[in-house]
Length: 177
Image 1 (cartoon, rainbow, N blue to C red):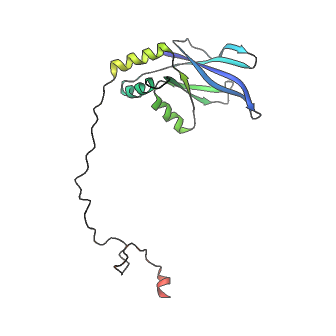
Image 2: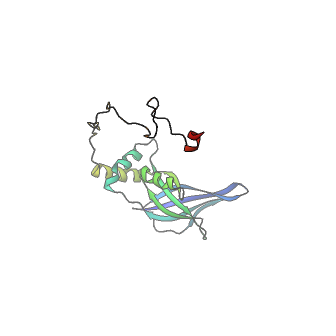
Image 3: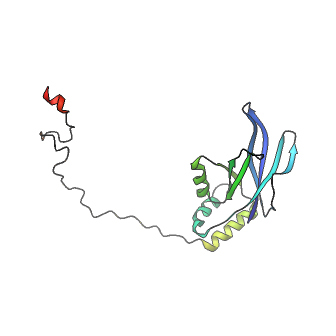
């Protein structure tokens, strides 16, 4: 599904940042756009920055379900800073909090949470209902290894005293003195 990304530009709060940018909305089914000005109010402006495809995959229904069960279901917008005319390149939009976390961990991209519109929530929920298969929990079993086994010869073989087998050997120079 094509989804438009809305970014808000506000004046920066420090002298080092002229502008502050934030993803504030998504437009499901939006046509293509390239930084189209939507609204301007004094120094604040909102732009339809780009339209990207949001894709759902059957293997990630558990992640979508996790996102839908959150207090506020969100779409995650992944952006990358550019040196060109536009301040950001919109990399993707996803409904998976797990995928968003992977992008956030790299530190190269900016990940913003945007509240999911009701129509998009229903679309994702329909997909999850159609493709989600609940996996049965399987408890891990211990190995049959004997953990009470006595270990002979533990420690460094160069140590001749049996009293402290974990002691590290002295250097040859220290033994000669």
